[in-house]
Length: 359
Image 1 (cartoon, rainbow, N blue to C red):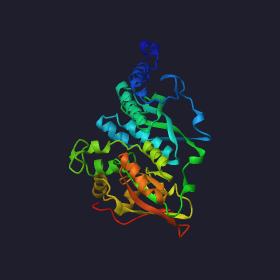
Image 2: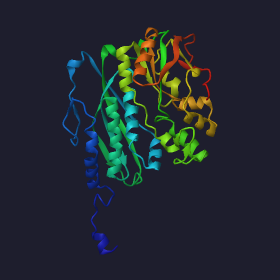
Image 3: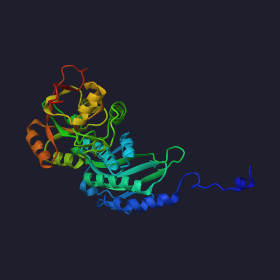
Image 4: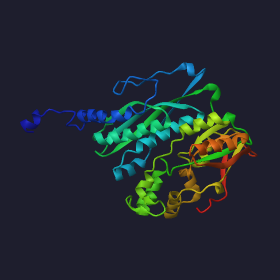
């Protein structure tokens, strides 16, 4: 070993972590983070903890709800296209729309971004998407963490996750205990694939079918990459508005597991939801995946949302009111099925019947 090598001093930067780049990233993301605020937020970006003053005079018996999620392998598409300003929007949707299922109003989110190497502009783009999603959800972005992991992740690799906290009045909590035979299931249209099933979608479209992300797809009217990066619809404000105007029993956020599995999570024992495929047509991207990959219908329906991003179970007397509220808020909505008394206690709590038109 030479004297020069022997006397070399190890540094954090030489090991692959740039504190300067991290500081630059914080400065670049600050303008976006401050856009996602609420009056209850105390302090600014950069502290050791985010502060949120809960206004207890708004609730008699407040119940806090928390949810943590990520966006899965949709990130691989964003990396391949070098487009990172919508992934954060997806993250917010995955978190806040889990909160609203029980009737909780999203209050704030915190994000965690892990990277192989900090690229300030990329971090700013990710946080821009998170901030814009928080604005749409009505919640604050209460800080987060960006961690550089050289040697563990490639220079261009990253992953994101987030945690959200919401609050609901105890007497207004939604859930399985509210659901009764005779209730009606309303479907709310998705914006596309949302953020689930991308491992299968990428395998079929990019590996088996060898379709280029930059290639124009006639059925989509845009490129495959643009279709696959379509931001996840955020339903939080729409669901809260619906619960305020109609008798909502519960919501079901349609993520991993598909329609029936997610709906079954919010149904009590003794009831069965009958859903009708004939009430809607899934978007062309679902048909393309099924055709190019020869994916069976059962596999499609337990992997993807199939065009339904959220369901509401409502009182039969309030169906028209519920549809009117959602239509006024520009959310595609329709009667998807109904809840009946279960004849067999061991039978699935939700099933699909019939065929999709033109699918």
